[in-house]
Structure formats: C-alpha cells, structure tokens
Length: 178
Image (cartoon, rainbow, N blue to C red; front, side, top):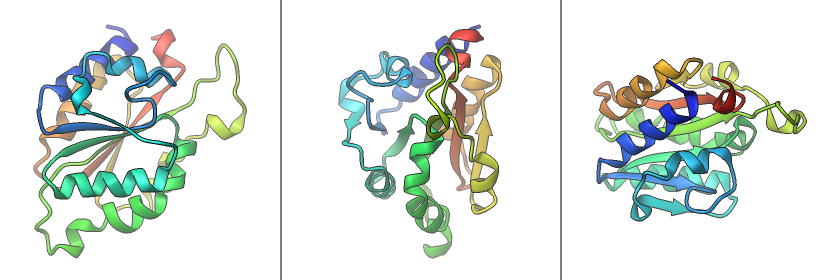
C-alpha cells in the first residue's frame, strides 16, 4: 500500500459518483503532484480554474448548493489560506445560516508541501491545520499520515450524514516516501 497509489484509488472512488466535481488549478492540466492522482477521473468531472483561490471556494459552495459534491483542490495550505474568508465565514456557517437545511457534502483537499528532495521555502510548506480548525466548528480536518487511512478518510467525507464539511490534509513528502 503506497501513499500516492492510495490517493489515486481514493480519487477514482470519488469519481464514480456522477455528482462529484473536482475543482481547482491543475485538475485537468499538469502542474502539481496532485494532478497525477486524478488520472482515473472522467475529464467531464474536472473543472479547471485560474489561480483565484477565494473565487474557487465560492464556486465550491455554489456547486454544493446545486446538488454537486465538490472536491475543491488546493495543492498547499499556503494557497488555501487565500480562501479563508469563504471557508470560515460561509462554508463553515452555511448550515447555521440555512437553519440546518444544508444537506450537501463538500470535500476540500489540501496538502503540506514537500520539502524533499528540494525545499521550496516556507511559503509552500506550511501546515495551518491546527490554527484554521480552531476557527471552524462545522468542518472536520483529517490529516493523512498513513496510506491505510487515505481511502477510509475520503469514503467518510463523501458519505457523511452529520452535515459537516471535510478538509483532508495530505503530506507532499509522502507521495514518494511511503
């Protein structure tokens, strides 16, 4: 069981649901290590966006309102922090604002950037999981430290009944190490 192959398996599993839409930068075109985990996903389920992180999170919420299950991909935490307004003020609060009637699932996929074999410097390798989780009471944050935890985490995210959003945090260094 390898980290990268388990991520690929999880993305293919999510892609079997026709309501699932994979949204972000480098979901269709090469650009990050996450791109290659989406090879088993139908291209019609991928929505390639420009670099506009806050807009992406807003579109993510809009897709959920329309009955889709968005898998919003931010390759690194350092990029996801640019969408915190939407995440903290809207996605985390949507169920409260809708008097508990928001039923749809949202999956946000992010990562802690790899430092090996080349360190890209601190603006690409941060882990804001602890800090951001303190701001969000309706979002569960799951860190994927072991390959065996990957598929169960994504299965949990897509089958939730508790109305929580799921942010899944990957480790870039593990793509080639585990």
